[in-house]
Length: 544
Picture 1 (cartoon, rainbow, N blue to C red):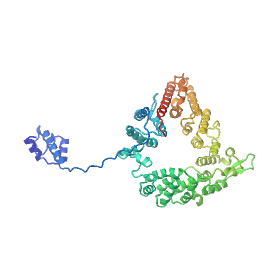
Picture 2: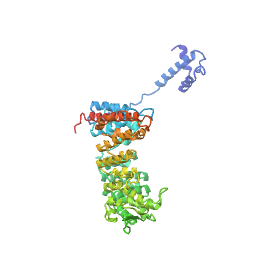
Picture 3: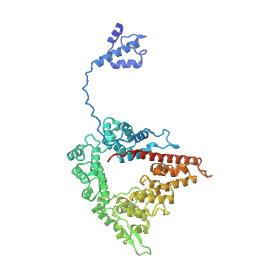
Picture 4: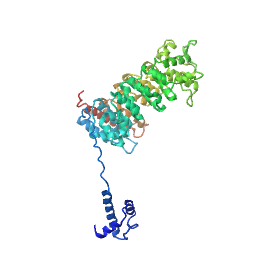
């Protein structure tokens, strides 16, 4: 540094903000103090900044060294086969197209295959490759539906990473035991300490995890602090009892019927009504039976309904909501709540010893059929009663797509969920053969994956019929997307004949033929890709 420059630098105030302001404005508009405008001003400013930087750094004391980061925990699970690891990297690297809508083309949507890949990898007990963890956590951050499977696959190292990166903190909340102080579920003292001192999210996670392992211990933990919990917290904690709900929970739930929160009372009543042998279910049976009876004076035995005229305090205590929603009559609202909470075993004895199928077939007087059958539908779903669900669903080939008891396709989907996977698939296949695909989308969503062969054939045949008819192709895009994810990969070879562009009828939608060909090409490619994924994961089965 020259003598002149050193003199200028020494004369400048050692104020970093002043130097920064001068640099931002430029030396043509503002010169450092003690420096005349001119060619030497920029150099003088830089020299002054350099000198100020040295003085600032020289005045800092060395900081205490941070505690050395502990290594990530070991993951004892076996590693992925090499081909499966490469496939995972490709799935995670895929990103949805930026253009959004429009035609999808014939290429598979890899991100839509990631959930199935994770499910298969978890079923085989593989560990995630360490280098894939950042991309896996980023994918789970953007899609909440991926989180349970992704965090299970990612294992303990994902939680280690999540504590270092705020963008991945969701993993600490979503993963059982993800909190920094989460105890071993075999450690009673640690469990009690976290329950008493933990954050709300940690306590919910703990209660849910403990409930799946020891239902009685989880309930006992909740009972200890129940009286001191906030109403919104009591509601969330009570909801965790749905897992493993059984007769041993009845005493606690009966006490919750007297809770000061209406929402807590309603949830407790709903859980008790799902226990047909509970005292609340018995009380509801007596009430409901008083308003539904058999009229044998007519030529055809008919069900008659006399809806309640009031909602008394005892009904409200048992979970009946007195105020009807907008557009609903009070009496029908009360009746529906009583019937759906009553055990379905009430009705055969009350209605002449008939089976559920015979009861559903009976006429109902005065326009009460929709309300009564809708309440029976909700009861069948709540009580997981397959016999009543079959009766309310009716035959899939029935002319009415709404069924004898279901008030909507959504209600039918919930009834189907009470049946085993094979029966569910066979029923939906029969429905599609009669009614086609336009009404079946919700029903397909509750069927087990991969679809059973009869259901897969029914879907493909219906798509082929729609293609040959020149139907508007985009109306089937949702079903086609489901087929890509749910058809058995072995069906791919059977679809080769559908890849050609069909002849278009005169009244077909413009371009429908090429769309259908493209869609079937994507379907076949996706199925073969899914088959390859499963084969790669099965290449080296881990030892048990």
